[in-house]
Length: 305
Image 1: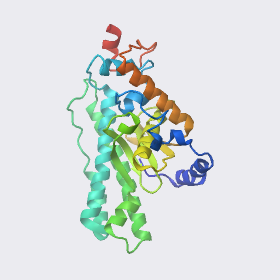
Image 2: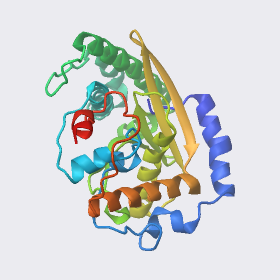
Image 3: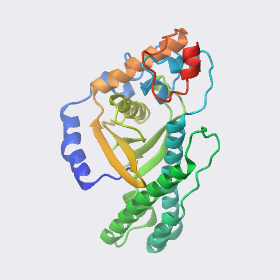
Image 4: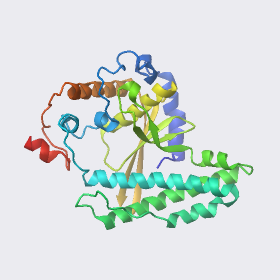
């Protein structure tokens, strides 16, 4: 999911990064400016990225119900299936790196090739009643095989180009991403336990995987993680990538939305943070949205309230 095609790499290096250098983000919107407005958190409430960046609920009442009224609901089908597939992607990357470190450059390829047969089983714990486990298992297997092939191809390419590569160098060159990166968003008024799907090592790019159709607010997620990373490392993070994954049977379709994280997106994120933390801090009920999102797990409690 996180390995760019040659065309995408050229787009990143030849267009997006030069644009980022030409159109510098205003200093006040860099994450390291967290001490001063507009980044300084106006309230003590700390929300998660999904609570700030998700616009599935048009009024944001899902956050009010959860944070103010304490309403607890389980995930809907799409949320639960997406979380299952996310876990599989992270597990695959971790196991691939473990094989490289355990077997070394000379012996790791057979182990990585064999990894394709080790598809994890879908664990039904906590699943909504309408999950089709057979279909989900087939999708997971297709996703696992797709990513295994990408991993093997990248390791083979590095081994072919670098005859003296060491174990640690091979892992970094072939798989230059940290998956499920834990980061602390406290300085920007966000949760201290944030998890970015992946962060690329060489060119600072933040990834977020979506098993969903394109939505304009999805870029708020990468903006949040980028600004939090800037607040912690004081290094610019200008590029995000939303990876959209869809299935036709077991065939995996991938579309990557590489984008600059500019002033407008950063300001939108801060506005959403301020609005939602105010709603929670002052216990302001925004009312139900005019149109509820399909499958919203809060719909029954929201409309009943």
